[in-house]
Image (cartoon, rainbow, N blue to C red; front, top):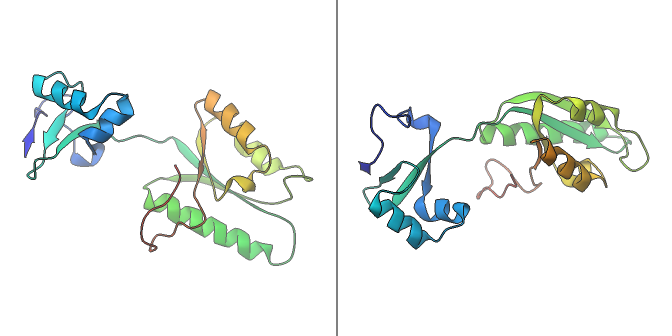
Length: 178
């Protein structure tokens, strides 16, 4: 496998710390065409390390994204049998986080109606500036103010991650939202 990663460079790190991304995908993310990226690669102007697979496909090597503290927020409306629903949601989100190699810092469970009841546990979760990511089952868990919270957290460099309901570890293709 051809590679431009020197052994003693800043990029020489265990394979687990680097993520292989196809050159065309990297170019799309950078806002340039794949042809331009390939030309940059040929001329030695590509600003990231790259390698060529035995099949001839070009990959760029990027440091894995480091995620800060992750909190899981689970909420359900009041009523009978809701504890089992909360536990099921918690299990699904914990499984989702484990599948995506994310460490969960805290799990917050709440029984309340987001339209009429206050959400004190969500408020405490949002007040914790050390939490950089909040994982929820669906946007409706947070209620009608979901979009406002997403915008407010984005301004602070934080985000809400939504794991869609149809996601399951054993269930075929990974159709999650990150």
